[in-house]
Image (tube, rainbow, N blue to C red; front, side, top):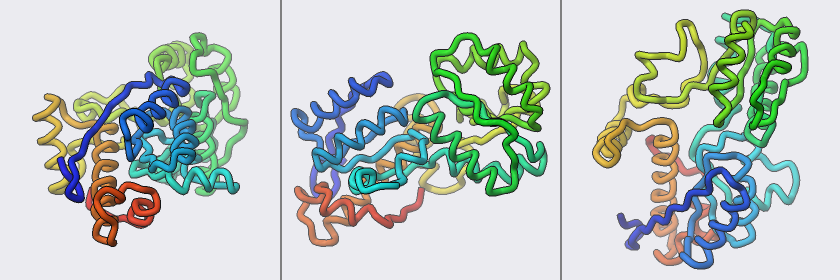
Amino acid sequence: MTVGGRPIEIVVMDNGGDADLAAQQARELIEVEGAEILFGTVSSGVTLGLQQLAAENEVVLMMGPSASGSLTVATNEEQQRLLDVSFRACRNGSQDAFAIGDWAIENVGENWVIMAADYAFGQAVAGGYNYVFSLLGANFPMETVFAPLDTTDFTAYAQQILESEADGMILIWAGSGTITLMQQFEELGVFDEVPPLFAFSSTADLLGSPPAPGTVGVGIYHWSFPDNAVNDYLIAAHVARHGTLPELFSECGFATAQAIVYGVEAAVEAGSNAVDATYPENLVPALEGLEWDG
């Protein structure tokens, strides 16, 4: 637990998906705990707020598995200022779309409808899928169907999707309402008429027990797929420490930790002393273009 000759100290705070609480905690981490690098979060909306705070405090932010592609795209000077200290070692939703796009259009059809949660994650990932699928030759006969994340009755949204007459549906949803959505769409016959593409969780039993026979989607990570020494180490360490096999957030956190360690080491090798290696002026150049085995 040392890097560049300095001990590593990890301070963990749980924001519960609350952007205001996350900002408060980040300030405490920087001002009270003396945090030199921020890592987080699992929510794109929460991470967006952390970008602003990291830039204001001149601290490097390593994003977590928040999958909004817009978090790492700058369309104006203000966004570029945020990106100057923001990095991601994990994949985003647009990359998921490229992974499955060709197969989906060839095997399901050219006409698609998108159903997404109406917040930063859903909006950005929906935009990414729309762009990528259109690039690959797909058509969207209707606008993306957005629903609030706290929706409990999906009947009206189901009707819109059925009326679209699309060949397939891209379902972008994460959160506590997922089970309710699935149950209602199943009962209303949506999945029978408009087959969905899912984003699978990477639970240990996924290969043996998929959600339903014939279900297709994107698997972000599964512990059994990568065949290299790095993944072998991750599996062994995760089982030893937690008693469970690693899943998609484990892999993302692991890759981010690698990037941080290799980045600090590279900054030291470039001439920075160990204390200053985490300063943006030294760490940012070390992280840009960094390559490693994951």
